[in-house]
Image 1 (tube, rainbow, N blue to C red):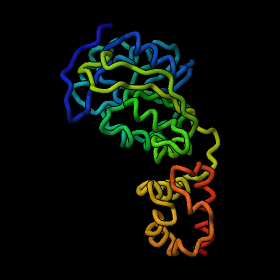
Image 2 (image 1 turned 90 degrees about the vertical axis):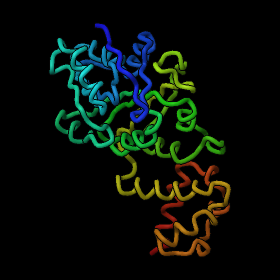
Image 3 (image 1 turned 90 degrees about the horizontal axis):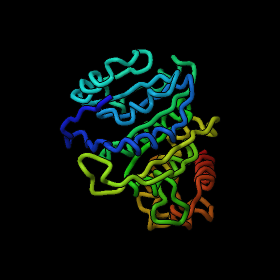
Length: 273
């Protein structure tokens, strides 16, 4: 089937994937099998969609905010069975992934060429719903992908790295050149996957609180934690960081692993009484 072309709009941060070979390669990373329920974020003109629906027994929910793209997709895939492809005019950030997974009685697989302008927001939305997702495959700006898989004590290591680690295990698969898109972005993109933890080690409330600690620590990443967390400890825990005896507080945020941040969280929790 021939994909239709629509004019990209800046307000949607649209860069449409036009290279069919790369689209096929990205779709293959999701490793679809019969019975899978796939959520595609921002299908655009359907470059990835066409490869996803090719898998027998797979049900695809394509979430698209641009009504022009929705109309184009419905025309392009008009002959596809409605049980195979569900084209939904919605904001992916507001879509209830948990309810969809519950109705299906199984976890979801998620895929998307994420708009650069809201990449972080979309990733955190996926991480917030990690218990309803088995695997996510996303294409993002290369420097964002490098932050996602960064090692401790590097400049790329930060909030996004740790948020990803709380949700699952990430891996970069390959880069995608700007020439694979219309219009051509000024950056290289990367495709990465996150296999979500089957059993979340921290409940939803504690994940949120742990993220707050991490965010406060990295907001002033060049300072030691004893200084960068002073306001956070007073506001969140009603304690003075000066009263906490922990060698971790003499380090900077980029020096702590996720396990270290979990330990520090419990230390602060105990100190607050």
